[in-house]
Amino acid sequence: MFFLTPNSPKLLVSGSGIIAVVIIVAGLMANCFTCKSSRIKNNQDIETFLRDQGVLTLKRYRFSDVKKMTNSFKDELGQGGFGIVYKGKLSNGSDVAVKMLNQSKENGEDFINEVASISRTSHVNVVTLLGFCLEGHKKVLIYEFMSNGSLDNFIYKKEPKSSLFLSWDHLYHISIGIARGLEYLHRGCNIRILHFDINPRNILLDENFCPKISDFGLAKLCPRKESHISMSKTRGTIGYIAPEVWNRHFGRVSHKSDVYSYGMMLLEMVGMKEKNIIAETNQTSEMYFPDWIYKRLEQGTQLGPDDDGEVTIEENDVVKKMTVVGLWCIQPIPDDRPTMSKVVEMLEGSMNSLELPPRPVLSSPIKSAIESSTIVSALVESSYIVN
Picture 1 (cartoon, rainbow, N blue to C red):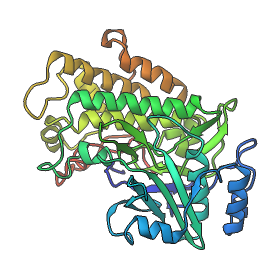
Picture 2: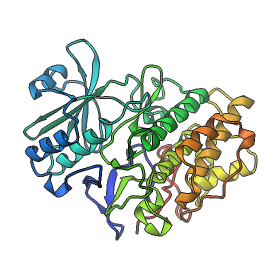
Picture 3: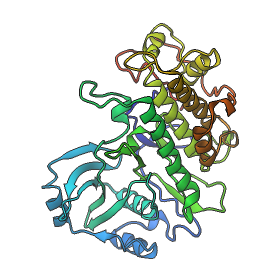
């Protein structure tokens, strides 16, 4: 069994189910990518790719410029699956986030995958790529700065004494913003972008807590007319990967795979606010989070007690709505999940118009006692098993 944590690693899983080292295979499809990943062997190949894809219009920085804007990489913001992010400042005084990609033989694929994806976007709920640096083995991406960091810092409450409390209203509007961002990636671009790594660490919050989808290192592009894509390896973060991505018996991989990841994150946003989950999971040796939350919803148990006491009737309706939508999104069969357009419609509509989905059972319960050392280990069992 795998457990969902805020630090769950990105991975590629072979067909046999053994977790492999993190590599990026540039999904170069007809009418999207014009070269094979095997050809991305040096900077000249990358330069050719960037020129062919028309992304050289992005501002290009020298590495000396990058060192200057980051004060020699003094202020580290965090680490991701593909590199370290530092805080920087442009010559005009604007703050930026500077991602230094890991120095590995695969980082050419990481680099082109992220640049080719995000450079095609322009949406309030997708982080903006401001420029890049490609100089020798140094590959750097420069983004707009998001002052409130990532969503996982709030829903996991890593620093409860200093972290700003997110109300249900905040979480509700954040969930809608993320859904709109995904809807744009799936339908609003001339080329459909599948993210494949939606999780709280990759949702950034600006000064107004407007969410923006980030980290496109695992993304794939495909023509909008294509409903499904082929994948030789499983990609994503443990606990958020759709079942069809690791086992084709569930269906074919498509934009519905992002819907599943979004649904798991939505349920996690609800669950992390639940005080009772700690007590309940410590009292049972069999716990599968979607089952737990589905049971409470089915029994009409009030969801989501606030840190300051009971939620209002309006807040409880919001929590129920987020829960029902999340359960619809994690249906095992892709065709049973809503599109992101439908998700936005459901979230913005009335709770009374939503039907309770089938119970999304994908794996057996935990057979051993759940550790209670952290809120995360007591919360969520991954929705799949890798043998």
